[in-house]
Every structure is written in C-alpha cells, then in structure tokens.
Length: 634
Image (tube, rainbow, N blue to C red; front, side):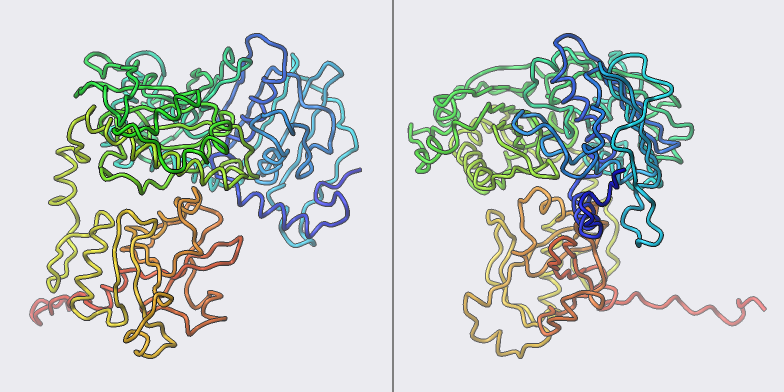
C-alpha cells in the first residue's frame, strides 16, 4: 500500500510542502482549470482526429465533473504523489505533475475513473481537504500499488474526474473574480451588451453560459494563445446546473441564468479575441482591419468604429514594432536580438477605442505573456511613453517558448520576464502609443454615464471640515484626501519628496516611525526615504503582487481609503497587534497603522494606513439630536 501523504515517511514536511503548493494556485485553476488542463494535454497526446471534452458544473452540490476521450489516465498510483508526472520536455500546459494533486487535496470527495487499452480502474478519496489537520484526526490516505478495476467502467477509452468542494470557498472566490473582472459595474457593465449579443445570435443559451465561456477562453488553459494542431478540432461541451442561482451564487450572476436552472453549450480551444465577440453583434459593429504599422506607428487609418489586429512572427517584424518615427531602434536592440527574439513565438497586437475593449472583452484590454500558448498572470508595468491615456487602447499577447512555475501563472525565467517587459515598453514608446492616437483619435477614458457616477452619484463623505465632499473613487482621490488631511496637520510625521505616475511606485517620503525622534525629519538622507503606495482598496494590491508588477518587499507603507477583501490565499490582512512586525520590531511601526498585509509564504508584512478608519477617529460623527422630554415614550 502507498500513503499519499508519506511517500518517503516524511509526512509532516510533505504536508507543509503540499499546503504551500495549493496556496500558490489561483482559485479558478483549482475549481476547473487544472483538471481541464489535464484533459487538454491528454488530447494532445492522443491519436489525431476530432475529440470532445465534457464538463458538468453543479453549483448546488459544488461539484465538477470533467470527461475526455483521450488515452485514459495510466493505472499508476504514484502519479497522485505531489510532483509525480510524465510531461517534462513535451511543452504541454502541465509539466510538473502537480495540478491534479492540488485539486485532489482541495476536495471533499475526489473520484477518478479511467479506461485505457489495457483495462479500467476507479479510485476515490474522501475528505482529502483535511490533509493538514492534526495527525490524530487526519484521514488515512492509503491506496493500493495498483488501482482496482472499475465495476461500472466507462463506455469508451478516456478519463473522468469528479470532485466536490466542502464549502463554496473555492467556487465562490472564482465566481467573485469573474464578476469583478468582467462586470465591474454589475449589470450596468459595458460587457453586458456582448453577453446579450451572444444569446441573441444563438451562440449561447444564457448570458451566464457566454460569461463562463469568455472567462475560460480569456483566463484559463482553454484560452490558448497558440492552439496546437491536435486541439484545433476539439470541442468542449459544458453543462451548468443550479436550482436557485440568485441565492446559491449571487444576485448579479444569478440574473445571468435568464431563468434557466440547467443548460449546455459548446466552445472551442483558443484565446478570446475581439474578432470573436464582435461577430456575435448585429450591425453596426466595429470593422476589422489588418493594417501594419509603419515607423513610429504611422500608416494606421483613423476610425471611430473599428479595431486593428496585427501579428508579428519574425525578427524583422519584431524590430519593426520597435522602430520609431526617425527610423531608430532602441539602445537595447542587440540584447533583444541575442536573448529575446529567438524565444518569442508570436506577438498579437489589437488596437481599438477604450469603449470597444470594455464592451467586447471581459476586463477590457490586457497586456499579457503566454508560455507556448498558456496564458500567465505576468503583465508589463508600462512606464515608457508620454501618452499614458492610450495604454487601455491596445491589447497585446506575447507568446514565448518558456517553462511555467508550480502555480502555472508565472514564468520560471525571471530574466526573460524582465526582457519581455522592456520589449513591450519600448514597443509602446516607439510605435504603439502613436498608432493608437492616430487610430482612435483623442482617448476618452470615461463614458458620459461614468462621469455622472464618478462625481454626483458618489456617496457623500459627510465630513464638513473637509473640502473633499465625496468618497474617493480612484487613487487620485485617495492622494488628494491624504494631502488635505496633511495640510490640516493630521500627519505631522510625514515629509514628502515626490509623487509619480510613471515610477513603479507612487511616492517617496520620510516618515517618523513610532520609535524615532523628530530629528529624523530634519536632516534626512536618501536612505531615509520610504516607498509609499496609494490604493482605493488595500486588497487590490494583491493582484499587482500576483502578477509580479510590484513586490511587497519594496513597499514600506500602503495608504488606502478602505481595506477591502484579499482574494489571494497568499496575502491576508491581520491586526497589527497580532503581527510579527509588532513582536519583532515595534519601533518600526508607522504612525496611525492598525492593520498589516501579510505574505503567508515569506512572512513579510506591509503596514497599511486606512483613511476611512482615520476619519472616524479624527472627525467623529456628531451625536444624534436629543429627544425632547415630552416626546419620550413612557
């Protein structure tokens, strides 16, 4: 017999490693992505021809089932150990044999059934999600050295994996992320029109079906930016069940079920593009162009109702993307030629007006890197170029030949990531910003209804002492509120030395910490400067950390209006009094800080100053008016 938690009698170390690995995976990958990726990889290794992958999602039972018609999972129990796999060197989405185990140990019930040319088997595990409980109550994970034959075998060769979650934590977090990314304004979001188009055109039975397909094709392994030949004829069929979607999921997403409790739809493998979603709309709709950019981004015709899609695949084409209006290439061109261009499979650039991106793509335009077709969460931190208002006017995918890390949303080669970020910044500075300005005209980031929401419809701050009357709606509002309070001498411990929209971080300041004297403010040196980041919600910075756009170790203080809720398992908010910062270095605490954001993997903590809480203390609301004695109810 094998023990799933003790392949070498190192149970506790193995448990710790397994927990860290699970925490490195995004909820959407645990919920559906990893098992789907296993099926996609299996199809790629199967015989050529048409294949099907069938997915069933039951939100009432919090259960997912995924079936493919590929070669069948091998009868080799060792493949369920963490790190057991046979995909190295094959350039598949799964490379290190980890994802399936992450799903297994996140599940209350996990069942795998397989039929191969050699035979059938069935294996089930209950309560695997309790793997990190104390050893005296931890379930047993023993299994045979060979899986037993399935008494009710699959009717054809392939694999079926069914897993159920104990609570709605994983599916709930996944659905919340879909809602926040694709529908930031709820049912008033621009993307709602595309969901309606998808149903009206007959492509999907409900708006939720369209939303789920768009998310899978934009943010999961189904959205391959380069589709391998074996997957080009693969159909993915998805069935969704939920008796009471409004109560079981959410009011917004439940509304998108359009009164249905069960429906099935089909989609294909491939990254979601504007061309696909525009095809669902009725005329008039944006026209598609394929105009190459000249030096400095010239030769792109101006249009108010169109989008331009270009692909670059050769070294000469990559260099054309970097050639400015004077015909000059960037200083780093030799580095790009020697160390980067040979690793790039293709670059796909789409330019359009901001409202078009927000209407036709969930989450609007993206700047992403993919590894042999697999989308990562890397994103270039665009700091080059003068016309930053045009950043949201282009969508770009750079696909490279590279390996992914354990979580499979970052590249292993961080030097390559750095070169890719420089490449995108140089391309934006040299050609893309100019091409976007010529193509779409003056970039207007707000629609008319957004202007009214941005100002008059905001919630009142209810602080008559302040000139700012509305609750902050963006980072600039937070900065303005902080500095108005500073002007009222509410933050005498701060001396500011610069704010920047182009720098990686927002500001630099000298701050008198709890254990320091005022002398630190009088004759500071550059080493005394602290990095300060501003956010509406402190929780939003975890997305920057996950994409590696920002590093928690670089930030000394995070100033926000409100805390928000972290969607990352790795980063969690805790009280200052429970933090390592208070225990180990209380003299380094910044003034007015009561919460910290903790990196649970490294233990590093970012101190958080919450302005909403500070306002409650600095300007407490007036007491309610006294009730006249003759109106007191005896």
